Amino acid sequence: MIKVLRGSSLIELIVATGVMALVLTAIVAGLTLSLKIGADSEYRTQAVKRAQEGMEVFRRERTLLGWDLFVNSLRASTTYCLATLPAPKVAFTPGLCSSSDVLIISSQEFFREATVTIDETNPTDPLVKITVTVSWAADEKAKDVVLPQTFRKWD
Image 1 (cartoon, rainbow, N blue to C red):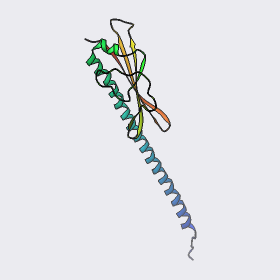
Image 2 (image 1 turned 120 degrees about the vertical axis):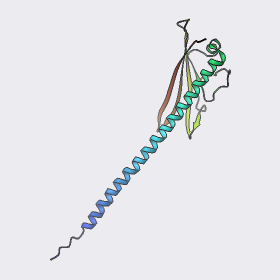
Image 3 (image 1 turned 90 degrees about the vertical axis):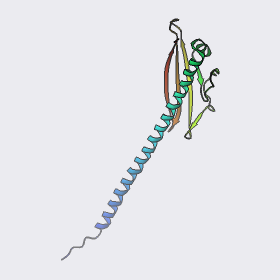
Image 4 (image 1 turned 180 degrees about the vertical axis):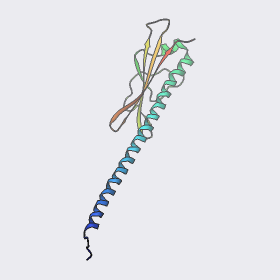
């Protein structure tokens, strides 16, 4: 006598479909996370590049103007919006970035600001501390890259 097992193939089909659904869901979740991490990495790379560009403007001005004119062209404890980089030997315009002062790169809005602090507590070794900050919003979170540098008088 041969026993016929009815319904076992239907159960196997349901279990196999469930396993496939779980595997496909995991693959899609992994791909989504990978794309998100790739975009975050691209935004951070762009922010670092823009922060370096902003700092290079201050280095350029120190070289072109010389120390005394460079220090005199800056205001102590001031923030400068660097949405567009100033031309050589053109004064920096103080002020925070507004919502219209954006850099749009890869369809992402970035804000670039530089904070200047002049430390003349030691008159023989004055310091100009500049911090360039590039910020953006991703996934409803504020993110930023901060690039600090201290300039010293040199002849």
